[in-house]
Amino acid sequence: MLTARKALTKKLLDKDKQVEWKFDLVRKFIEAKYPTDKIRRILDFIRFYVSFEETTKETQYLDKLSTIIKQRKNMGLEEMILEELKRQVTESVTKEVTQQVTQQVTQQVTQQVTQQSKAEIVKRLLQRGFQHIDICEIADVTEAFILQIKQVS
Image (cartoon, rainbow, N blue to C red):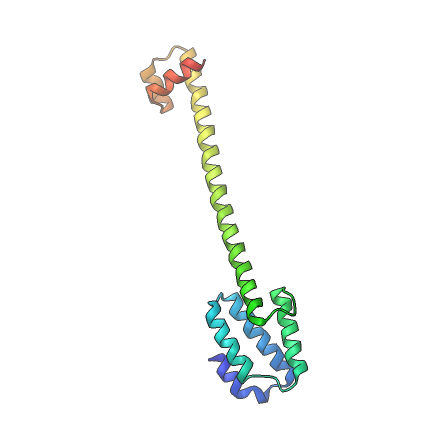
């Protein structure tokens, strides 16, 4: 809707404002993570119905767009958008995987520390002559765990 409205009122904007408007619109699509197909259709509309009369303005628009998308200038607009979307998805997936791995490692370390702490408690209670049934209740461990600690000690 915004594109259509601007297309109808574009004559009211000076050439530099038109460049800014097209640039901001594309940036908003990318930031909002619109599907690539939808961005392509909107950009086609913009390219054909909100075109610049001066080729220098179109070049200025594409140059400015390439800075936000961080790709080569000779790459087509659609390819630049696809590359930027791929980069954003890759960053998102990498961040998610990193969070999952961190969570798993934290859980594993916590389990190991808990097991080591319980083992140390069981050793001390065994040294002081506590019965297995009492150690199970105090340390919240199984009889098998106590026997395992006894064998290692």
